[in-house]
Image (tube, rainbow, N blue to C red; front, side):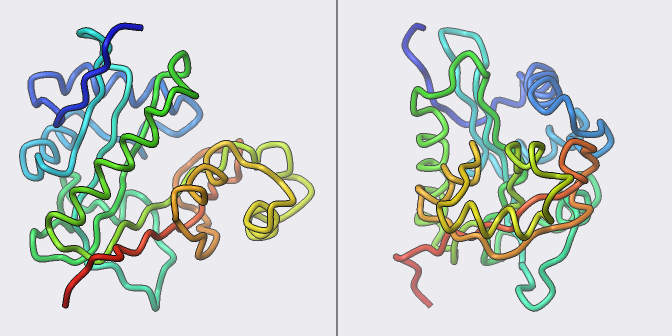
Length: 208
């Protein structure tokens, strides 16, 4: 591994980033991941909130998001719904929440702090823009082992209580996120019954 470079997502590398996301989330239906056009729209419209990680010149990490006005009284939603038309239909610079639409690290590079750095970049963006925090539909890769024996909410409760460990959710909890609720029909992934978890990080520096 060479020196890692963390930078904003380069519109010139969207084709590579698109292939990387689809390769990383290979169990998710293609229709529920970014198209090249959507990814380009996000990168161009909100450059300060979208990041990539390079090892020399190889893309090995990706963290993307938009600014939304999230309704916490009606939390159930799907990934396509929250993104809107063209991947930016719900984005507005005045909106109070950063919504993390995708975060991915090359499997060969996991366990090296890349995910933590990507979350730190997102948090830094939220602080710089004085937004309320980060919201996301978190994937539950560990749920595949329990999908036939417990509901997604039961699984999330056990992970939150420390009775089970999920590779992604447990990490997010350690990053200061809270698990709010299970999201059913979030994105089509048969391995987890299409379920995800709504996670929230509240910006401690937010000013009204």
